[in-house]
Length: 218
Ligand SMILES: [Zn+2]
Image 1 (tube, rainbow, N blue to C red):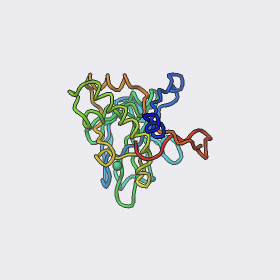
Image 2 (cartoon, rainbow, N blue to C red; image 1 turned 180 degrees about the vertical axis):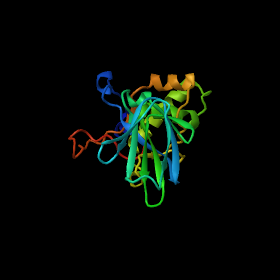
Image 3 (tube, rainbow, N blue to C red; image 1 turned 90 degrees about the horizontal axis):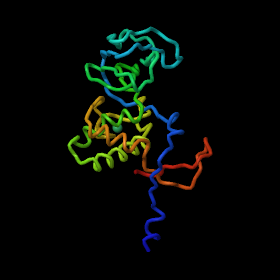
């Protein structure tokens, strides 16, 4: 009886192997600001500013360098700021004084800018758990939240594609506040690393031929 009820709806926790995970580190685009005329940015390590459409380097920014991107002076559709030498998860960027892991993209719209944090999934979670739950919650609750938040982010990538990013930073998607450092949250994320909830559909993805893993909400 139990089998009959649970099998069709079975949610399988997949532990992605460490070998795969070396290359499996999806970079999320999280919308931080929209409708602004300018934004001030500061980077923790040497970076390059690139033309997002063509990939060519526009300028180099030294460690600790701060600068302003202004709607009037931005002549191309989008610029990205990425680290010059280190992995993106080791960079932090201050967006109007607030610190985030990863890089940043500034997109020019019709009459304003959209500012997007380019952040790998695991680093993104640090900025979600601290706000979606209190760091003082029991470890097992934080671990459950880490798996749920990771699953939600994967499932909802591209939710804001028309605005140029994957997820917003509000309750519409998941509240995200950038860099946090709480022992309990760091541990909850580390101990559930690469674990997410998948619902097998039995169908294949048209493009990759691999099983399609997502249906409906997790
Ligand atoms: Zn949203």
